[in-house]
Length: 285
Image (spheres, helix red, strand yellow):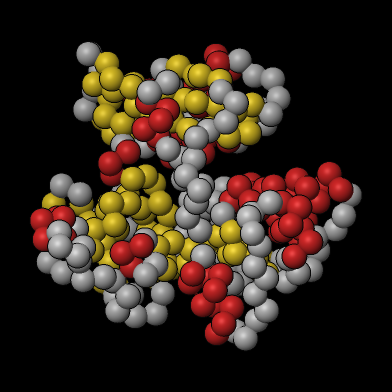
């Protein structure tokens, strides 16, 4: 919000419209050419435009962050606006943006983009951070740059654990293609450990969201004495679908150890104000 909303607007000498809260009705009346937001807000804006029967064509740019931006939402937004919706990536510790998509038709839906100028990145084996993984393979994203913080104030142990040989450890598992585009696979701390295999919740969530009856989804690991953890999906429906149907939908696209153990239907996925899934709350359900 500070970087993309306020500081970029000041740098461009743009008009900044301040809203008391992110209500979709207020947003509809305020946005004209560009809007920085999180994916749920973009979806709500398109939904509201369809509900009102009004056009939102002419919004040239959408700048998304804070959580993964689904490729189907990009397609829907760009069809409705005629503009571009691109995703960037960063962390509080990196002030925050380190990677972003180009604001052109070269942007890659589903990817967080390429490193910003003066930002260095490495994709390292989480088990051996000195070893870089080959292009296309999964590894932890490490970054260096002028905007990366020096450490947590008064927390030397936490600071030391956040760096390796001068590189900041993002905790995100990514892949990079031969054009330099980076795609987030999962968070290291969120990986589900099933019988020694690593199961990325984000991969299963993305598959669930391709089902036409699924409005939202989250996957967490639940403890199991034999397997260690089992993947459980929490799903918000927009249409009709059974648990068995959704399990089969995912199973058709993943290895056997990534298959969903069960599906729980709920009214809403608990999320932070920035739109990130609050998995700890789901684990208590």
